[in-house]
Each structure stands twice: as C-alpha cells, then as structure tokens.
Length: 130
Image 1: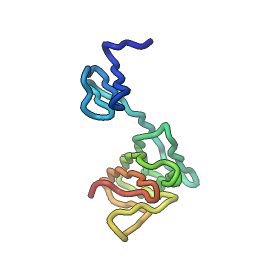
Image 2: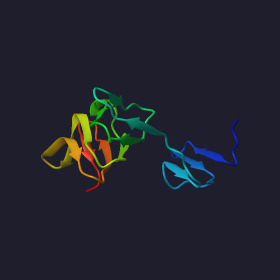
Image 3: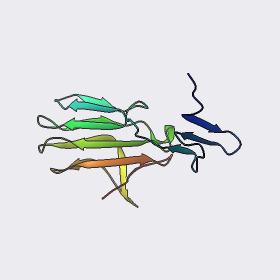
C-alpha cells in the first residue's frame, strides 16, 4: 500500500521523503531504520560470504579465524559492510584486500576489539575508521 502521508516522492527533484513532506536530501528519513545483521561462528574450514542482503556481521572467533568472502568491489560501488569480532581469540581474514590508508592494504585483522566498517569505491574496498 502506498501512503502519501508517510512516503513522498519528489520526482522533479529526485528526492524521497519518509515521514518528511519536503525532503532536503536524495533520501530523507524521519524515523528509525532497520539494517540486516547476521552471526557467524568461525570453525576450521568454514567461511561466510557477504552479499547484497548483508550489512552487519558479528563474527565469533573463539575457535578459529573468521574467513569472510567479499564481492568484487567493482560489482558493488557504494556498498558498506560492518564487522564486529565478538571474541578475543583469533582474527578476521578477508578474501580481498582492504585499503586501510592510501597505498597500505591488508586482508587480515587481529586484536581484541575489532570493529570494522568498509566501503567499495567501485575499484577497491576501503576501511572507513581507524
């Protein structure tokens, strides 16, 4: 069902407002949003493959390194993924490299408090925060 009091489409300015009659951005949301989460318990030989339906992955690394497969960054420009390592043991290893700063890449993150956000720029995966 379409409710024009809840969702406004401003086709002339290419803007959409949710609970907003005069959107000031391409997508203007006045309310909470819900993003998909998943849980992965790493075991020897197992991996998790991220896709277009994923956003946040909680990785339990108590028994093994969490191996995570990312799509090619050329196939999903603008896509954002978040990862939270929920145990202190082991680490997270990706099938693709991630730029942590210009000219510095890695695919393996270790440490006790890993919270990682990455984004595709259409050619590379980039780490967003320190």
